[in-house]
Length: 373
Ligand SMILES: *Cc1c(COP(=O)(O)O)cnc(C)c1O
Image (cartoon, rainbow, N blue to C red; front, side, top):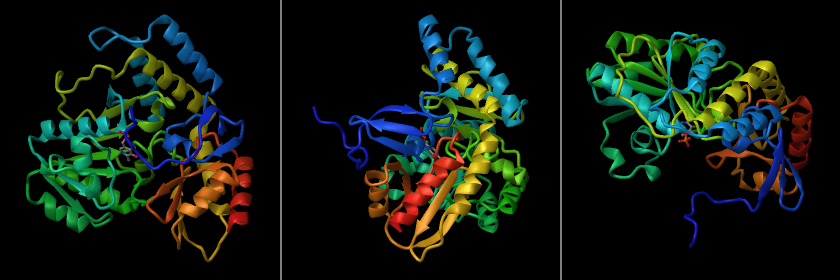
């Protein structure tokens, strides 16, 4: 049987990893500035994490949501404290797309409305509703496209208000920082206006923090840089350091009734052991502060070059926009310098390193980048 072709792949086969290092099947060591797409938050195979998952699978790996699972309460309690929303409730699922799907569904239940405002260059996942609010026609099928979605430009609050005036909008969904769309940071003033507009017109503000959340930008959630308080926050990627897990934070004002949401795998024992270990490590090692400090160091160390157009980002969510397509540069970084990087579109190298990255790691990258440039 052939595998379905998902992405175009680099010819590297990782077999072992620790912290920000990865080794391939030939024993070559790589520096990981991609974190498996912002998933590896506390570092690969962190000993505390490994032990927690091992211990859990030896006790009980899975039972469904039809029984009590104290590991879920433990996570909700810890997360409330760390993220600053102790009064919100937590719904647990298995991925970022699923979290957005549930967030959109809740907003629609709560308002009784069915239109959603989303932004140009957005990415929210590939399931039906999530892909419908994603601004990339090449991944939206006719079946997905039947959802009522209006796209507006980022930072254009007048355009948002025009749509909200129609009276049929359930939610505005926005990424804390746009990842796939090219590290586009919404203006703090815009987020504040968006928050007021949603209150004024009675629709829900959904913050997609799947990529920008969990400490990546140097605050627990990227929107906290703007001091706003969303109605619903969706999470995924780094939440369990690679074990599939997602979640939705729901403010107390949202009328969410029992039975509206559900899932078979969401909140299972193994995922909860992994997610609890992640929060313990984030706290014990001050990884949110580290992401900010090392991220700013990285951003400020990138050399100026006629080949580089702009460097954007916050904390360890960084885009280096080039004046040329970056395929060759990324190939050289990988095969000559042994550094994993990500990409946004054709012109941007995207860095989403584990939050435990050090300044010494950054120096290695900067030296390599200078040599390539
Ligand atoms: C990755 C991502 C998603 C989708 O998450 P999956 O786990 O792949 O379903 C949604 N929103 C944002 C901002 C993402 O980066």
